[in-house]
Length: 92
Image (cartoon, rainbow, N blue to C red):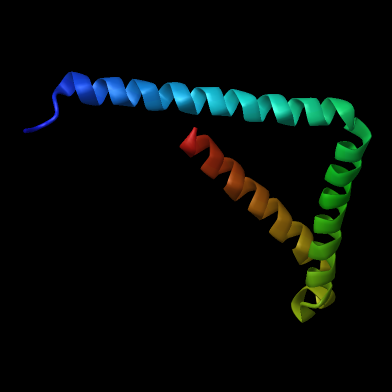
């Protein structure tokens, strides 16, 4: 015997309710942790950003073409920003 359309619909509604309930709890825990330790989160976020940029700098410093042509790093960065911005606009 095949399940009725209403049975499937009811089960999907139950699943959606459970997902929303769990999602709300996760957001609450995340928000309360940020409220309790704002400086820790700000420090860790800043460290992550700076470490990433510093890592990119070190990688770029190892590419001979960019060492000999530092202006091409700037051009490459600008082209990358234009391409990603255009892609973002098309996907939005």
